[in-house]
Amino acid sequence: MYTVTDFALKQKKYMPIFPKAIGKPTVYIEGYPCEDDEPMAATGFHGVQINTFYDQLSRYFAINEQIYIGVDSFIYYSEGDITKSVAPDIYVVFGVAKTPERRSFYTWAEGTVPVAIFEFLSDSTAHQDRHKKVELYLIDIGVQEYFVHQPELKKPAEFCGWQRLHSGNIVEIVPDAEGGLFSEALNLWFRWEEQQHSHVRLLRPSLPDGTPITTSIEEERLRLQEKHLREEAEAIAAAEAQRRQEAEAMVAVEAERRRELETELEQLRAQLANSQNETP
Image (cartoon, rainbow, N blue to C red):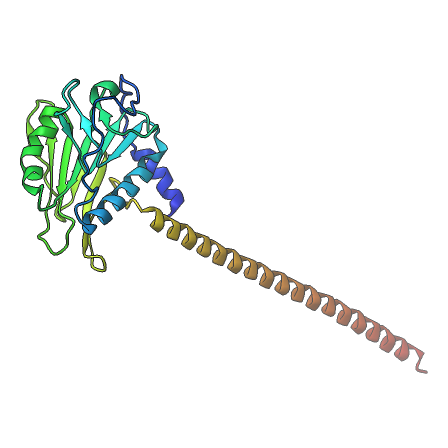
C-alpha cells in the first residue's frame, strides 16, 4: 500500500547525487530580456500538463536545496549573445540553489546547464521540438536528456526522449513495453496516462520501483485517507480493548461468584455435619 511515510523513505533513497555548480544564483542580468509577450501554455491541455508536471517535480525535488526547476523561462547559454536563448516548457538543473527565483537562467553565471528538458508539443513548435531542438539542447547547450510529449488526447500519442552519451553522440531512449522512458539523469520513470474528463494525455513521473509521484492534491487526499484509516484502526483497537476489559470483568465477576458459591456450599456442608452429630 502507498503511504506518505514510505514514499519519504524512497524519496531519499532514489534522489540523484551530483556536484555543486561552480557559479552562483543569478536573478537577472541587465540587457538580457526575460519576457517575450508569449503565453505560458499554448492550450489548456498544455496548461494542465505543465502545471501538474511542475507540481510533481518540484514536490519530489523539494528535499534537495540544490535543485532548480524552471518553467517556460529563458535559458541564456552564451554570454554576450542574447540570441542564444531558449525557453523550454520545463527544465531541471542540478547543483544550483533552489532560491532565489530567477527571471532567466544564465548558464555561465550559474556555472552549469540543465540536466533534463521537457517540451510539450503544440502545432506551432512541434516540428522544431522533434528535430532542431534535439541537437540544440543536447549538443549546443550540453543538456544530458531531452523529452517531448503530446498532451492533447485527441491527437496521436507521442512521447520520445534523447540522451547525450559521454562520447557526445545522441541516442534515442528506448521505451519499455508500456511506452515509458527512464531518465538516467533524474533517476525517474516517465509514463503518460489518459485523463478522459479533461481530455489530457498526462505525462507523469514515478520512482525507479514504479512508485508514483503524486500531486499536491493527491498527496493531501492520501494524508486524509491515511488519517481516516489510522483513526479507524485506533477505534477498532479501542473497541477491542474495551471488549477485553469487559470480558475480563465478567471473568472476575464469575470467579467471585464461584468463590461465594463454594463458601456457601462449605457452610451448608458444615451445618449438615453438625446437625448429624447432634442427632441422638
